[in-house]
Amino acid sequence: MQDLLTQISDLRRPRLLIRAARIGAQTYRREARLPRLLGYGVTLRIGPTLMKLMALEADMNNKREDGDAGYRIAAHVDLLIAIMGESQLLRAQTQAVAPIQIT
Image (cartoon, rainbow, N blue to C red):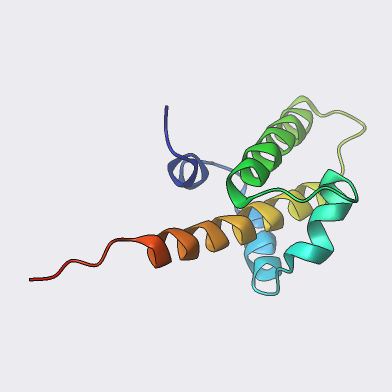
């Protein structure tokens, strides 16, 4: 099974969605966006949060591809922003925990 960061880097979505999400991810605030997406009172670590967001985004992408009338592009961009923001937090966290090599 691939790690989360590899799964995220392998996502292929329309360029306009990704561009909009990158702009939004620059000002990502976890405490403001996650309750709206995952429910209020839910506090998860970064890994489980990313897994939940990826599942929600996959469902949203299926709706987009199927031409579902319930598909909302703004909600899709919102999920992508959260995924990008959480992945940035995960990268920062894994770099901070990386062992120091002494030579």
